[in-house]
Image 1 (cartoon, rainbow, N blue to C red):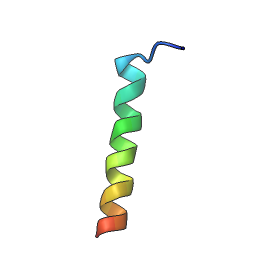
Image 2: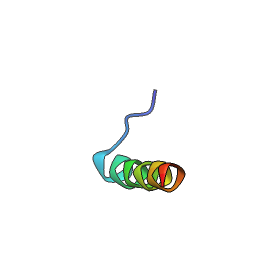
Image 3: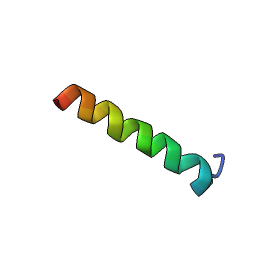
Image 4: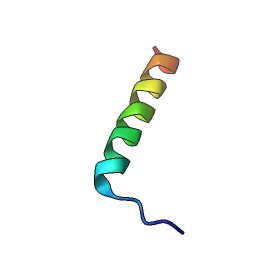
Length: 25
């Protein structure tokens, strides 16, 4: 398993949050 770096995880999480907002809105 490749270790996920916070710097890489943050933008991915941010994109996921935006996607969820777009779906819900």
